[in-house]
Image (cartoon, rainbow, N blue to C red):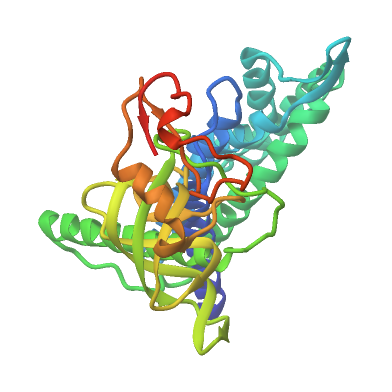
Length: 373
């Protein structure tokens, strides 16, 4: 008994924590699409309920079972509604169509009605069975007549299954008289608040550590024919990050010319131009080839996840290669001595003129405008 209960609790904690980490890494979707309901509300509540519910189940299995069943309809709907989509075509191409929100809510209520009608009258078995049969027949007739049933109901069933399994399990253990995994005991209100606060801090720290580890583990380097990235003196887009960093740790991939090189590194910021917070001194760098004991010019982008945008993490997009500061001398000079907007700046190499060109330099036609070479 205890082994099964510990396995269920551990699985719920791991599942809930995984969804919280996933939500923190996902970019914030546009409000024009229902996807933001799933990724910000649905996944967040899914992770929180499974994590907290599984922890509560260690001392109070019945409370945990009730919590799983109580939150099931709302979370399942938030996760399933964005997936209930029809693909349609018109002269301008393909587009997605979702059901109206009132229609989707009505179908979801009918979907859960037989289950909860039987659950609330479970002590009266005859009444419970009758309510279940009648509500199931009514719901079946409505589902058969509505075109949205075939895209909404499978998702609702899939997202409801984990809550139903966990809720039934913990309620079943309480009804069978299984002892709780950790004996409950009376504590003061302040002690409870301290325990909850410490738990939140611990979960937050583990979430940050898991996010950084996951980003480093997924770091890859892909070769693209970009023909060199053009020079710049201002950000390309809001998440553009440009700075120099001394690589204090490089993931061990292989050794080249006696130096370790890998696909991710930890850098100590030396000179910042834009894209970093003033407090960020140590940065995780990913998606490139980094070499140890090297001060590099970093031209990359910040992660845009709900949590990752707040962490010191920069990935080097294709054609945004890190290179030693010695190889980025021209770019660094541009950034340090950016010309005014009305100036003409010419960048090039000085070469010896051809032998047949004997025109003195002072006699050459000046370029229009002002600038520097």
